[in-house]
Image 1 (cartoon, protein in one colour):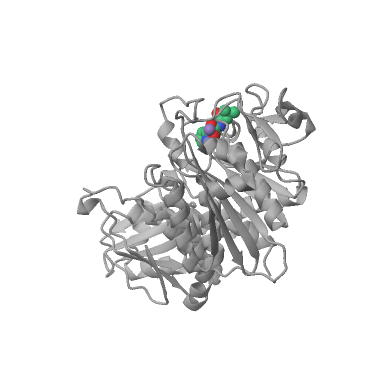
Image 2 (spheres, rainbow, N blue to C red; image 1 turned 60 degrees about the vertical axis):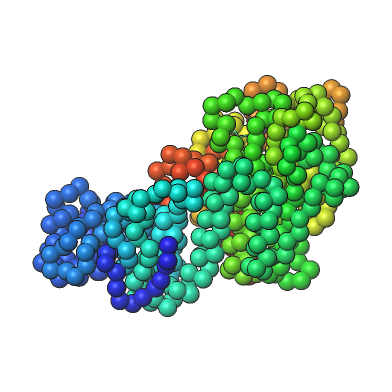
Length: 490
Ligand code: BES
Ligand code: MN
Ligand code: ZN
């Protein structure tokens, strides 16, 4: 999707805003007048009221040159925010994407460039498609809409604001692509190669292979990888846009490119979704892409642990005991609780090597978080109230919501093992997401930390949010970008 900015419309479709109770925005009013009341009549003939997210398409409007007019609802004028714009415009774009329109000129009824650029972000996110494996897609099933032209009073300001949001759109799309890719294509080595291409955006990138990880003592991560013929990789991305000497912020992502469960094999139905078990890593890579693209004034390190969890003759067994980089030993009771094993070494490495101000990790870690929160919120877990509060606020601001669950000694006790320092399971089926979180907590060495369990939000096939495609949502990129933008830059 090509996004451009103009002060006058040139597209074959015109988009204009309508507020609740069918109150026309100035640009809608102007079109209504020019067309002898066509918009008003169309509204009367429909159930369109201007509520946020509603769309009404008027084809071949009399008295106008444009082939189409599209009304997009913004709801109550006082409650219009960047998220309202994103969703409203996304709904309009989704509506027009395949219908023959080539360029949508979108009139934005807002003075500041920020809201205009959020409209552009909504358009960009809604236009996302993952079509590269459809080799027989008929021409009339491909998107016709190639350009969204933002028409704003101050198009210069809008264009300028877009410089800070376009990289976020690119980061989200990159994360979605990674989650969508099947695991026969995107295995750790190939994934690391694709991440390395981001050097051209200005990121410093380092890739560690299994020999290096073995030297570092990463027995926990490598135990997961040992049943796969694919070599595990640890990829470190650095963005140094802040002051020299300022401690970096650290973001760590689970990148299990496919999770069969290992010897504790998962059931067959739905297992294909486990190609998305690298959603945490995708969010971290997408964030780094966004920060580099908008030249964020902050020092950040992103670490992603890329591993395939497979059950072959060399695979790790239930009952095995591994020694992590921290020196702590872990009894493996279920090889399907592999995410925490992979993150254990990635977290320890990150805190030891980079001495970050804090660590945020993202992982599609537990099915239990879906039971607790569904697809609507990610679960957060933290040893630091201020960090957790900031993440919550960033969730609200970005519309990528999070909800906090507890960690504490009463839970931590449950992962003590009879034979090693800890086991990789909690007590039975209860509090499964918390058991995973307290496990991770043992590997952050007391550093301020937030864990985000995105098993429900990174993959979502039936979302009603027009900004989201089916399956890989790119969840986390906008949340983390917002978190960094609002609290750690200036
Ligand atoms: N990758 C899964 C968690 C998951 C489940 C992600 C559903 C997305 C959708 C994770 O590695 C896993 O298998 N967790 C187990 C842990 C259990 C064995 C303690 C789970 O949630 O069942
Ligand atoms: Mn698993
Ligand atoms: Zn997993």
